[in-house]
Length: 274
Image (tube, rainbow, N blue to C red; front, side, top):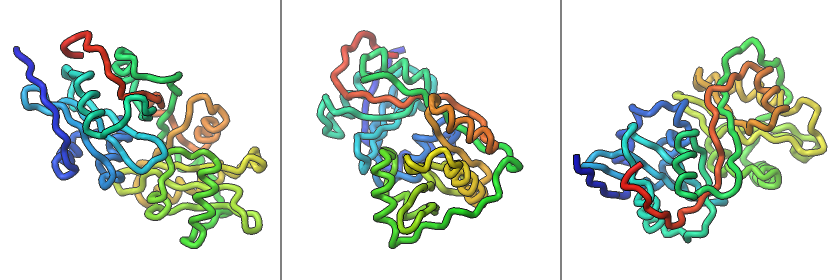
């Protein structure tokens, strides 16, 4: 059968029709682009024989060009052409270093066209499964609006590259202070009735090893459970102390992904489809 492909930049109002067919646990990043980040996302879409088969979504507002890749179905993808359309539409320089999170299948796709820069970092999605392991703790206080500037500086100095100000403005954040200074902060990347994702949890370097992050995570998990029964967090697989803390609080790994840097460089078309 002859395969005819085309590309279009879709609006959120059009692509939102995908939402009922998306498994949030398996496609948490793309799900967030359709919901939490809908005001700042653009969707480069590929159609084969008029059927939507792949989306490369771009998110503005972070310190780097951020993307999410989603295959609608297990079908052929004209990948170099999708990359070229996205590059021309988003107007990014070929040498710009972009970031995304990929499953193993999609990581191999990006690697096959030599788009990956550096070494991918293994990344675990963990889901909370056992309420009995949470700590009874109330040492953290909700962060007020007049403290936003301090919290933003604190998170940026801790290199929380996925943090956005909108998360602080729309979701509850909690912090632990010594005097007037924050020594630990935590909040959410995602916070709705469908699911909750903890994020931006950090302890000041000279206060680490005292269990502050464990207490923050426990309090945030309890707070998240009031919003949704499905509470997640993400952690680098090589951060074994953090993984052990989360497991000790009742989290279990549900997905293993890869955080990658990549470019939208011109790719050699070595096959008609992938």
